Length: 122
Image: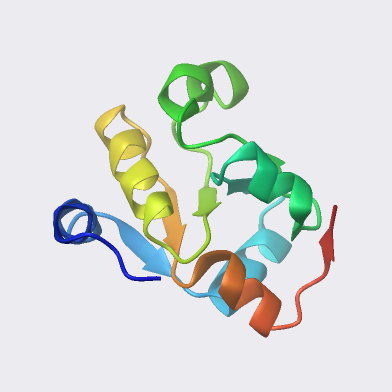
């Protein structure tokens, strides 16, 4: 997908501040820490069409509104993914601004999980 320059500009700005991890690093972290959460930030229709097994859906559009209720511990590791790693970077950046300390954006997002053969569900 070709993205607009303005969108890429704010994504690159966010990526300069967020921690990015790949699928393998994410799976290892989730396996080691039962407190870690995997969050799909895509639109509801994207999530319903298929998501990583066990992923929680909190869409980017409601992330800031709902995160404190759903995940009040600002120390909890939160691993965010979207379609390719752009929207998750924007969400991770905002969560850090809200005081969350262990937020990660998954590079490659949904596409990287599918390519890696990670179990998915609908």
